[in-house]
Image 1: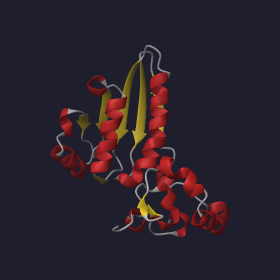
Image 2: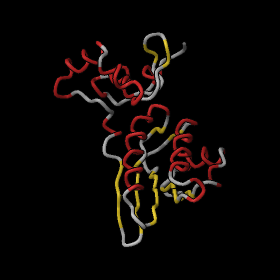
Image 3: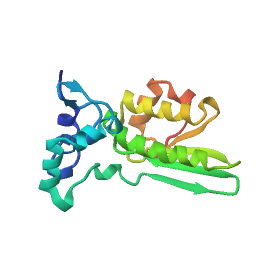
Image 4: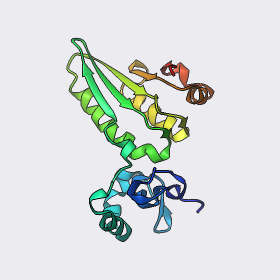
Length: 183
């Protein structure tokens, strides 16, 4: 089947593991039961019943993390008289492993869209901490744009580092998003 994403995704010692093996439930595309698993939302029920999940939870006790710490609390909303601005602070490596955090933030974004009333809506993806984005990450921001109104959506990518901007430029995403490169 290849190399499981949990074996190569760094998590900065979450649940006392250097890689995502001890937080594999938060990683998209892991290999469990002889097949490739989906997103956290899709595999949540089976992971919660998994003996390994229970063992890690017991071993970590009060320090147990269901998500990597950098994935928590990344969404914010600001409101003015005529606009609701929803921001998402992107993590260091925006890849397939970021899918659960992005899905979680996406729910908040869609709630803001629903509750905006007559106000204009602007979505800000802050790439200040992001040093790498892969095709899965680009797919997620394209999905966000589509769900927020497609070509009519006001989705802005801000604080994009040169290396990430280069990847976005190669994919020609500058034609779909306003990209504001700031260090």
